[in-house]
Image (cartoon, rainbow, N blue to C red; front, side):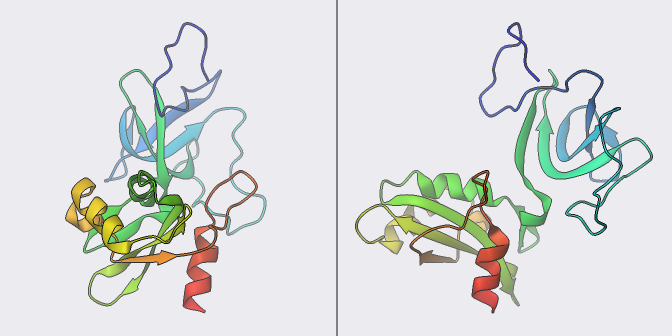
Length: 187
């Protein structure tokens, strides 16, 4: 929620509205007012879970908090920044890697029209980071993208593979359908 007297922060989706409360689930299960972790929500308009069991979130952590399945950061002013989805995090050599961060770096290249990043099973690293890129016109030069990522990303966040594709599968809201990419590769 945002009102005219609340300054807009780049990347923020706003603050809790009305009777809703937001918090972060910390690494050791504690509920934090600010920080980074899984976004929790509670309030009179929050459902206790998905209608069909086995939905995309784990449900409730306690009778009052609902786990959203989103990795977020809440700052000292209560502004919320969505970072990624828990199910999309790549575990590479023991590090948590957010695909959206890598995608943003890849899309900085003028040679790239679109990009999506997923993790694929890898016996050495746990998950290999694989980038799917849609060329913007001419063919993508993989070495140039690799050099750009080496400059802009920590070593553990750099894709091990770049795969040129014609398009990135997206849902009705524009979100990347990572499961479709994964299943196309693994089947």
